[in-house]
Length: 469
Image 1: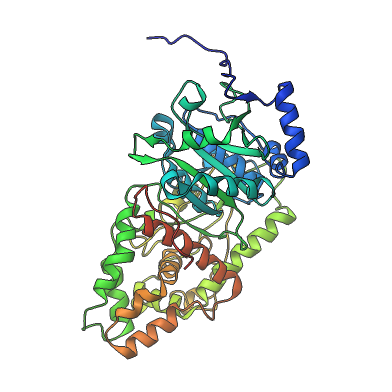
Image 2: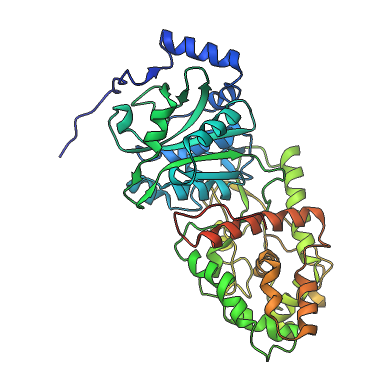
């Protein structure tokens, strides 16, 4: 049945005050004078309309991430790195969000995966006084932005649950400025803060939990360069369970009398979908006619990726893992990739041996034809297979790299259950981040924060950000 088309809605006023109205302008000028519109200008510079009726959460987060100048580390279109709704898929498949919308907890998860610092509060976990204090602090700063999850009915608006960033606060009138990302429906508008609190203090029928708000800011350290933890597939839960529950139980075995035996047991027990948890992100750019050289920025970024990859391969842990995967030179057929390797081949298998353990994926904004891959290369000082391969240049991260990273990412207290004290001491020295180079250490700690958050949530909507690992 064909649905009649609509051109906007009339904003119910009161209780809302349209931002562009005379009263709305006066409220803006007074709030600006009062110093509680500091975050507005960055937000409005990157403000966007949600591209799908159910993409309000994705659009709100895109606006905030771009306003905070967080680099996604991968291209949006052409050479441009930029947060777009289409890139926010690590916690929920886009097709599912398009059909069903997204919950509060999943938007928090997305913000974490994007590399932001997030504090989330449901209405039953805080008070209106705390909310007012948080909003005042964020509105008075350019370093923090607040996203509200609320129900439209208290504002006499049509629709149900919605997400939007809050652009400012008028302290004297106690009113908040909602930058509604559904601009095709309602323009930005001022609302009484008490009414916004009531709108957040409503139950999301999809989860049975109250809505709320989140504070999003930049982290002091940059997100990872080569890897990201992904929960876009439901199978990540089994991998998170493996990391948090199964591994500690495996370590209770008293027959683990050496590091090789310990690693063998860990690898043998890996879930079949292990590759769905830690993803290797490789940049793909559209090949421009007559232009094949990298820009200065691309060269610098690729240099950092190569440096991280080299630092992984220079660890003792990488050597031990590699010897386990390729005993007695069995990978003699493994060779470096050629520039002609197709995206499909690279995405399917990052190394011709051992891909059954863990595999990387290529993030591509193009197809197999007409694109350039920005692949990190490494001529590791470590013998990757045998003496014949020492001079080989190995491009994109291999399964050994990813497995090494996974072991480094697990919490240090994971290994406390190893019974043999000598094995424990040797293995802890392999997985310790204390002596890692700064660049690799930042990579590992960022992934550890992501995994710590996901494992702490265990897929539940009610979780909060765990303490920093």
